[in-house]
Length: 446
Image 1 (tube, rainbow, N blue to C red):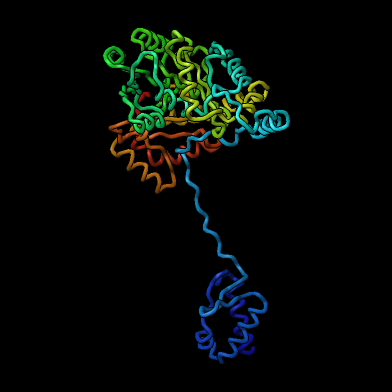
Image 2: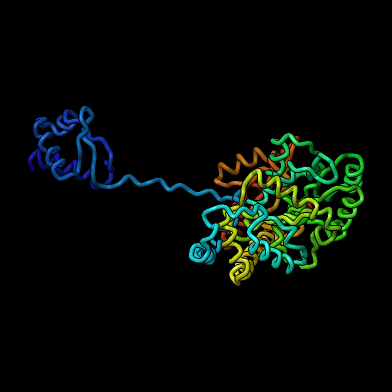
């Protein structure tokens, strides 16, 4: 075999077997000539042939590089197991049904679709649809007391800023709570106080003392499946809270974000329990349908309604009219009922898998029939150190620091399985437990 054929076969072999993958710089002409003990012209002729065949290419003042051949294999990156993902399960989003509603809006509703409707309270057919839906859940009100907002966060912003008939200024927050509400009062430099709501619930004597001695404008609370502990008031506690609010002229802002996932029909809202003049009821549709919907509903006392709408007009003329019209169609059709049944069934199945696993590992917590988010107390290690340890094992959990104002606990973290396929939950929990099992306090009944 000639030197030319030998060099050509060598370079071709190195490229085809992947030793020199695409993008590899070839050895210099001098080094190849030395390696094969041949003339540099022979090497140049070989490289010229390879360029002609589009196997290599030249870069001026740099050298020759492999153009075609075996691609350098892309490293397989192991995806983390995300117990920190609080988004709803995307596989359950009603893509096709809601697309049909959007199509119907574009085909039949031309008036005001691309201009202002100029009704900051909301699209009347949607308000009627929501009112009818609320009636099926024993939330009896009038359409004149319902306002549509761009998500519940907008409603909380408005309520925090607007004046109330009790002429008080201080907001009371349970701790821990929804992290965006904490951020809201801190960034608006609003007067606020906090009260602890732990595994034992509220300190009712402390709550009454605050209501009695402090100028509390409203008490923001999540009565059902509180964030992040997942606790719920009993009906007796709800009645007691409503009585105290009425007695001391304190408004209750009831964030019922997870109401659609409740499987106990005997649970009453504060709005049902209370004198309606002191309860503001908030309901989001983002959790039950999909997050990008960004529509919420507020039921409020009539004497608050005008102030609320006036404040809302300073933020926007109309909440997204396109989405409001589509949601009105969706709620009044059978599509929503079917979807609600599908997603609640799936979440309850995930909760049961989580419950079964924890029971087998000595952890007992309340409300597991519907709970897909759980907190844990740690011992021997801080939650921060534990989360770093988990990251090394490609596992992600939630630190609860943003759910607190001021001094934040260092030994709490939470897991969320709502975004996981049900079939993977047990295996993922087994992987997680191999790391956290020795650090979790088992006698906490939260």
